[in-house]
Image (cartoon, rainbow, N blue to C red; front, top):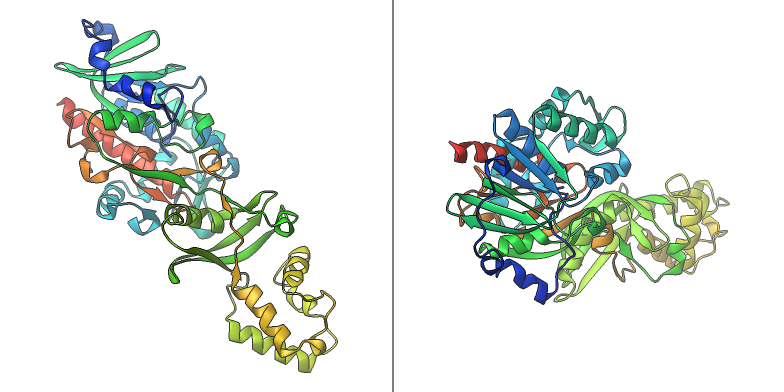
Length: 445
């Protein structure tokens, strides 16, 4: 996650949007701040990417100012991974991301891979434990451990951290950049934009970074929510809130299979969440307007459909008086089976010897090929990341510097790369933040 946020309200209305483009009129006659207010680099947004950039810059002897619009920073870090913070994954490649430029994603991840992120956090005194699915978490199982370590290292290296200062304007000057907001103004040789995207706007991610990038001529790949829950009108599923089941979700677009994810599915009072639903949500959302999209659920992903039929037949011979529900309950929760069998027009008390061929077909279809009743997605409010962003083709991924504006850098969620659940988006923040800091160092020289 980029996190942090420099702008005010957002997404901004057209009348407010113009402020970035008339900045020369607003600052007519304004000069650069004095030397005490001039920094080698100003980093806008103190989320994961901003903190990583600041620490790495400061370790290299660079005078750093880190700004954030919120009084308290790191909200996305604290809420991530169920408040445990999935720091990274044992294996991270471009295949774990969506982007218009996967080649760029690959180059970034290879420059600062997951093993270096693990080493970085161990150097901060954060011991990591490896869990199922290759996920790394702090040994304390507390996201606060991660945030505290990052802030402590930021302060220890002499970074000037100022919170509650929302950046409104950034202007390129002959001698560098002028970074200003309500009641403050700073000068800098370079600027790193780590303002995040639009996900969880209450944390400060209001889209200001996109407007800033556009004002400097950058292309923004259209943005949507990603890793966000699904909404449904189906009351039967809503009543299962809190229940988790194994699941394989497949997105079919115009009757063709596009993507498949296999992970736990969580029922909620508003719809569906859990890794499986979150991973597939961005694809559904970005395609639903112009295509016929369907989400098909397989609730027994470890069993082929013909194997399921064979099990029914075998059970009919060996345990004819056993209920079908009892046969399945070792794999799926009781209440879930009641709801699913109701939808298949079957009673939960039906025994295997009463189970006719047509009944087996109906239940097998419901278990293996259930048409998911998706109404919409929850959107940015509960999205873990934003899909789309600053076009990576306009960024030098060896330094994260803009190809259009010298001294302007980007890192984190603001860029066009969004990963699946499992620590991948944090790894993107660490990788881009580290590379941006290296780029700032080279630019300074």
